[in-house]
Image 1: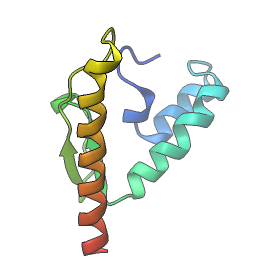
Image 2: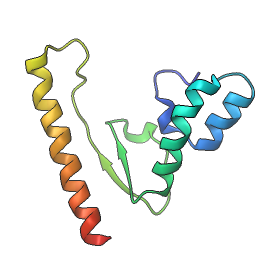
Image 3: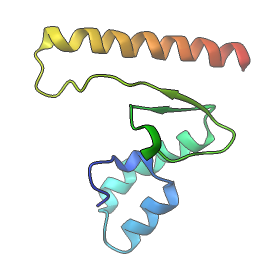
Image 4: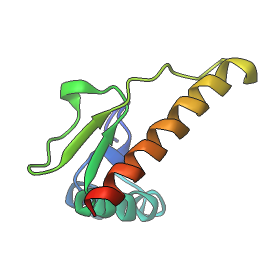
Length: 100
């Protein structure tokens, strides 16, 4: 489909068009589209270390979470990554709630 980048990083219209022309299974589009629409409407765009490869949505706040890839790591090595994500999400939610 789009290579190593998750479909969640694309504009919802791109995923819809790709599904309509057979490049993306509708089953997969059903999972991508709600997340994409929510991401476009939300107050922040969270990226996972993709830098300039991520799309730009004007007027949105960006939070780049450059995290280690947990693939191939054991549970003990993944726990600190999970904890870091948890802390970042709680912090972001408290900021969004304060500006809400």
